[in-house]
Length: 112
Image (cartoon, rainbow, N blue to C red; front, side, top):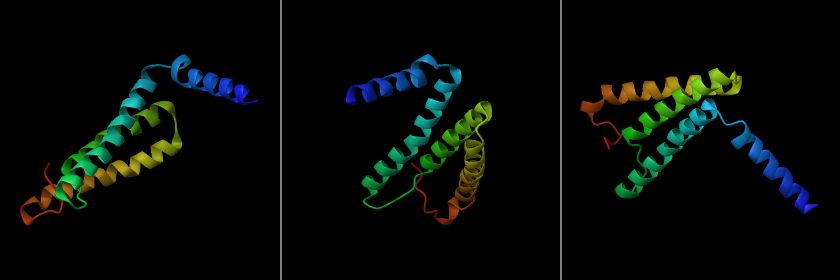
């Protein structure tokens, strides 16, 4: 029984990541990697500062990964991704606008 589950999982992973590999899968994976990179940037910046900080790079990775994921969702006709990333991307852009606007006033975001 355990062997059957292992074989079924192997077949599933092969089907999803190998048999159906195309441009959009590669694009979606790159989008997800960009989106995930924002957490690494935030974590490293916080460790260096000794406190929780949100560097400007976090918002750029958020915007880039979010836009790419939105494009992927549109191309694949995924309504959950379209709705989620559509709103999130607006929020990322707005945060960048606020940071740039308040840069001279001592913004809480680090410029790293």
